[in-house]
Length: 365
Image (spheres, rainbow, N blue to C red):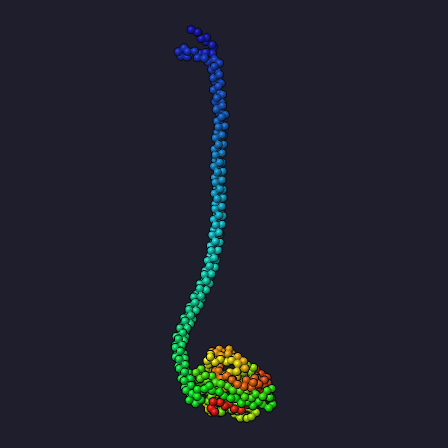
């Protein structure tokens, strides 16, 4: 067992324990003093640090609040600006929409007015159409009625024609015989214009009474009563030479027309025509509507222009001139009449008329 050496600086405690109060004690004291001194120095530093931290924290909080405030203000400003812009946009859009609405309303109003006008126009057209329809219906009914009346009138007219033809055929047979009925024309050419040749007589033969009974009877009556004596051939139209109750160099100034009227033989009762006796060259026909008392001799084939539908200047273009006789002898006399000069104008009236001295029924002898 080692024995501890007691230094001068060691002390004993109450139980005899050596307590070292030497250098160790001094060192401890110095250390303690140093610690106390360090503690005293560090405390302010620590406090400063804490203060700085607290200040920093406070600063940070203030700065954060400022940033937050700035950010909030910025957000508010931006939101406000966005809101104002949006509000302006909404207002503008509203105004534009309102303007569009007004325009659309005006457009709709115009269209509506147009539609109303069209509807009114259509209603008027419908009324007019209805009126026209009723009028057309009335006209159709009237036309149908008129057609029935016309058909009845036509039937009655045809019946009258047949009765006249039946009566006139009987009259011809009774007064002039069965025929054929021939008549001789004696002419006297005017001394102021004597065409080449000497022929002054021609003979005609009447159409069969079965074909043209009324017109044959009419002409035979004129001739038998001497009404044709003293008449004239007064027109040289190129396609016909026409004669009628006109005075001439043998009876100047005489009213040759009056005897026809007095005898009630001015015109035929109707335009009698038969396709089996057409207006060929050298046939005789009655001129005018109704035909008579003027008559003509065709100097060429006039079947088309004097037949049915050929005389379009008259009211009933479908009618024809009655063709009632044909030249059978004395063609030279007819050709000679065609050489006569004419006066200026479209009618082609002869410059000097040819006198009809007489028309004699040959089969009466």
